[in-house]
Amino acid sequence: MDGIKKIGEITQGVSKAAQAGGKTNSSFEAAINDALKEVSQIQNDAEKAIEDFSKGEVKDIHTVVIAMEKADMSLQTMLQVRNKLLTAYEEITRMQV
Image (cartoon, rainbow, N blue to C red):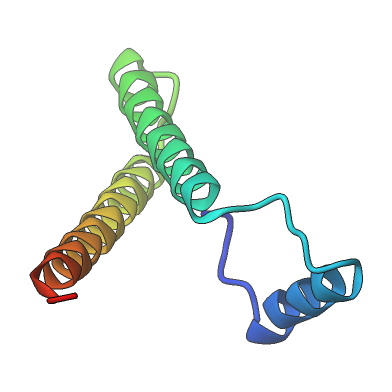
């Protein structure tokens, strides 16, 4: 996750897509896949920082700790999203039609 976007930037993108015919190339599945790829990349970056530190290529432990915490936070966020999705799915399956 590159950073937190302002709500205005997101809504401007949605309104531009709506004006262009209402079709967007992004779907919920694509958004989840992109987020998973991003979390995976952050995890890989943290592992590389640890390896570089163990090899002595990085002298500053702060960068390693920051990379590890960023990886941990992104993983925890994805776990919470997964938990919310599972809860929503279970709730939908309990609905009577």
